[in-house]
Image (cartoon, rainbow, N blue to C red; front, side):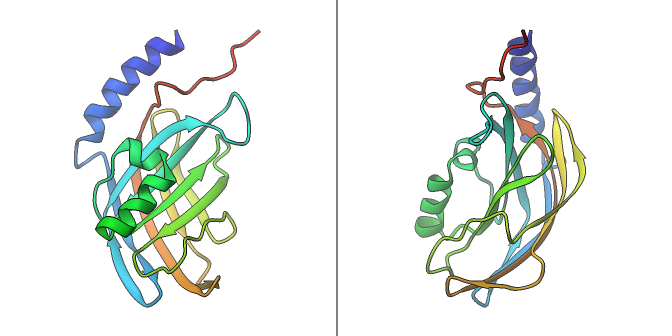
Length: 170
């Protein structure tokens, strides 16, 4: 039954995800003195890296659209930063709405920074179909010879990963 629900939700999510109304983001990322306006959001369900059998949600809020495959893979996003100048914030949220990791991405950085320490998540919606809220840093951060801050509100349907698996009930 979960596979049928996933298949339906994937199709429905992809239809909704292509709608400009469904994906909304507004905010900025400041990195080493350079500011980027973030106006796009995508959310993708993935297998949890820390809790086997659970599903996390990867949210990417960016200055331009990114694909679900790019959102799921931090290395692909980092490559786009170097290649195309992408600016984004990539956040992994567990089922309890706890931030597991957050990575600001900007061409002004000289190194990549990722940690759940420097992000606050204020959810306004989080269920099987959608995630919305605010990601922000508690002021300007200054670590690893990098300075950054971000404050963004977003709303996005959750695209289901067809390869993700939950632990079957016994």
